Length: 344
Image 1 (cartoon, rainbow, N blue to C red):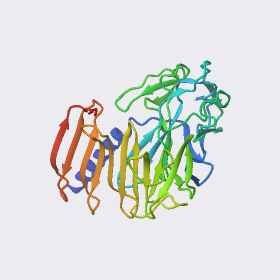
Image 2: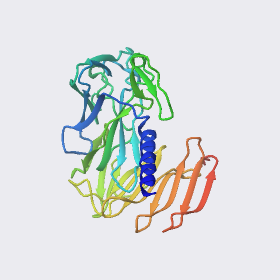
Image 3: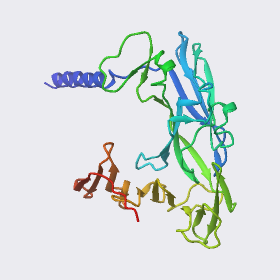
Image 4: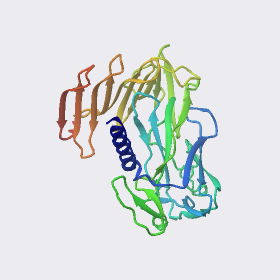
């Protein structure tokens, strides 16, 4: 009987593995992300390198690359996640569309890579001297739309040719629910695109009292414990007088025990972070001054067990849930239908 049970268990494992890995697709073209330095100061130009490799040992394969394109959808866009290890929290992502303020639309190009051939594509963040510059094409046209203040971020890049006519000519797109993919001689590509590995992006606080991030000057004042960033010069610290950012990070640092971080992006949202000693999130809030105020909330107890989660759903509703600990069972769950903005 034990032999029969072992045979049945082995067969079950093989079936599970076949189902689990049957839909995995082979992507011979890989994308690896790196930077030119280990750390940067706030507002400093950041150079990312995307190393593209044809890992096939026999075939020459096409890849779509930026060229002179100035409008439309970006081929590469950046995503910045929080450094915490107790959750995967997307903090910022780029606008996926180009807006370079020029009349010439330009184009992308197909490059054919020989077996095992590599090429490196640079893109730049905080290069606002060239952000709209036609002559730099689009390598400098990257921004999160909000300033990237000092801290440690986990960053990756998405390569997404889906919807670009020239890309559609060389790729067949699929999603995780597809049981079959068309056999048409094109290379396979996930519908959301291919994503590089995560890398740490270390941004240090400067000792300067004025920093410029994406052409916006911030005036920094301290009370000896906290550092306050104002979008205009002020004589005294008053957080209601144009204060955009507050942090406990001292100069020349990008990490600190019990780090506190607050952003107030006018007409967008506010952002608040309190951390454990190891950098994990104790509480994170992204909220507005409207009703309901929450956009995204995470709270953990001293044992790093989640106690509260709030989120705006894709359909526009707002979801809120609290958990009993240590069981992890839901204590209360609510939905709110829409946001109401109060005009004073």
